[in-house]
Each structure stands twice: as C-alpha cells, then as structure tokens.
Image (cartoon, rainbow, N blue to C red; front, side, top):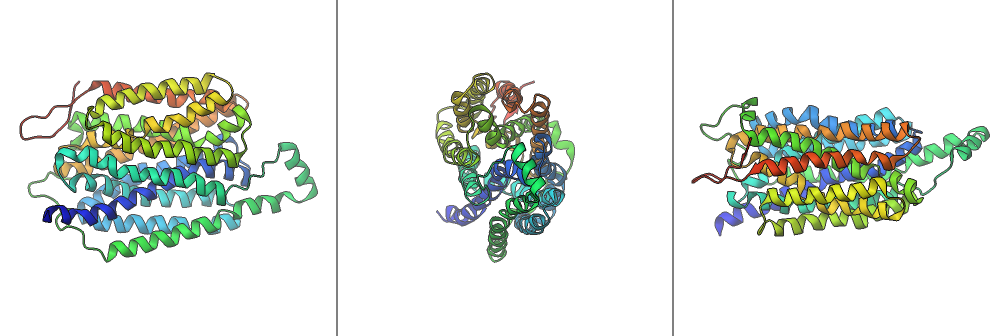
Length: 426
C-alpha cells in the first residue's frame, strides 16, 4: 500500500503532461485552415505547420533523451514546460506581424518542449508500477491525452476560427477595395488570446513541478546500466518500433490535419461545423478508444488488437478516398477511435523490458514521429496537383496503416522466465 501511495501523485502529475502534447497535435487541424486563410497559403504551404511540429520532434528527441539520461526525469519535465511556454508566447508577435515564418518558429519551439515532455512521460509512466501492466498503464495515461485531443479542436473552432470563408473572387474584390489586409489581420489576431492563456497555464504547471518531490531514483541511471548509445537498435523490437511509429504518426497527422478541408471539399461543410464535429465526435471517439482499448487488452494481446484496428482503419480510409458525399466524412470521423491505441501500444512494445536502455529507445521512437512532417506534405502536394482534390490524397494514410498491420503481424510476444521483454520475430 505504501509503495502504491508513493507512485500515485507522481502518476497523476505526469499524466497531466499528456494533455499538453495532445493539445499541440490536435490544434493543428484548426491552425492549418486558419493560417491558410490568414496568411494566404497553398495546401502544400499549410502542411508546413505539421512539418515544423514534427521536425521539432525529430531534431530534439535525441538531445531530450540525453538530457533525461544525464539529469533525470524531473529536470526533463521542467525543460519541456519552459520551452512549451516560450513557444506559446511567441504566437503573440507572430499574430501581430502576420508572419507565417514566425508562426512556424513558435510551433517548432512548442514541439521541442513537447518532445522533452513526451520523451520523459512515456517511459516514466511504464516505471510507476508493476512491469506486467506497463502497456495497460501507458494506455490509461494516454487516455487523458485523448481529453486534449477532443478539447483542442473544439476550443480552436470556438475561439480561433471566425467562420468567415470568402471565395477567391471575393478576396480579389476586397484587395481592390483596400480592405483585404485589415480582414487578414483580424483573422491572424484571433490566435493571440488562446495562446496567451496556454503560455500562462504551462508556466504555472512548471512551477508546480518545481515544488513537487518525485520518487527518488526514478530519473537516475541504474547501476550497471549501459551507456546512451545507438546499440539499443540491436533489439529488433526497437528497430521495428521506430519504423512502425514513423508510419503511424504520419497516418494520424494526415487523417486529422486536412479534415476541415476534406469536409468542405466532399460535402461543403462550413469550417466551424467541421471543427466542432472533429472535436466532439472524432476526438471523443479517440478518447473513448483509449479507454476501451485498455479494457480489451485484458483479453486480447496488444499486437492482435493493433492488427485488427489497422485493418478497420484501412477499410474506413478506402471509403473516405473513393466514396462521395457525407459517407466519406463519417468514415474519416470513425478512424480516430481505432487508431487511438496505436501510438502507446507501439511505444510500449518497443521499450518493454529494456531497463535503462529504455531511455534511448524512447528517444528513438519519439524521434520517428518525424513521419508527421513528411506525409502531410505529400497529401498537400497531391491536393494541389489535382486542383484541390484533398479526398484522393487520403490514400496516403491508408497506405501508412498497411505498414502498421505488417508490424503487428510480425510480432510475437515472448515472456521468458524472469523477463517481460517483447521479442519481434524476423
């Protein structure tokens, strides 16, 4: 009981961090159409919003892992929260100047902070309790990531999106009348207050962590532990985990980031309505999927559930890519429920049983999140190349889920006596 109490408050506090990177990722479906409008971007240019976030993960994951390895979990959290808060504060001058470049820099800094938080929180959660239930515990913590996932688009739709959608002809007339810049500045300025609130809340959370004592030894190097090196890739579970996470995050970002554009293209749905439906239906489904997935894993091996959900996602995206009208929109909104378990399951399978080496493995798997910077650019390019047909571009996440299915089917859970390590078959 005493051991359980030792872990309870740290578990609650660290779980709160899952909300922050969920908010970062799930506000992008709002920022993409909003900044596309305010900064007058093409679909490919607007995809750079995702690229700046996921390049942040790619470039900062290894330094974050080294920092955690050297200084421990608590200081890693503090560094992440400070970067996150600074990046959010930079949205104010970015909005004032309507500088898309400064928006991208701010997002990169926020993502750098989120990388620290995610690199710390995922392995730390797996250590806060019985190793036998590490996967279920990580899925449970990631369920609160789902709370951020559905709140972000609802808040963004309410406080950022104006609902004003002018046609190219109307914008040309406004330009000729000299009112275009004033309209665009009003759109850009809508982003100021939400990000000011985010910056203040994140810095307050940093203060809370500063004054909280985490369990001793949890962030310190274990005796006899191996050094921080790429030798961890000798484990097949880590190599395949990196590949699978690259394609999974690419798929997740593609599905959500262009949904507002997709709904407008397929059934002429207004942007505020699309944002509300994405948050209140798709992302609520994502959150519920995390809770139900944790429950299903009591009766079904994680890799089998992963394979089943990958097949369902592929079927739904086939409908989304080739069926016209509202059915396609409903199919996309159903996908998050089934992809909800994928990130934590791939992550937990990739680091399970590695001990101190789990820190560098965590960094490499987080680093593979760069898939989210790569695949949306392909979708944007396909849309621009086909005259704005974003629907056909949804074939890209479908292909990503093929790789997830392959990953799941190649896995075989092996629990040798005295070890909970998962081994991947070759």
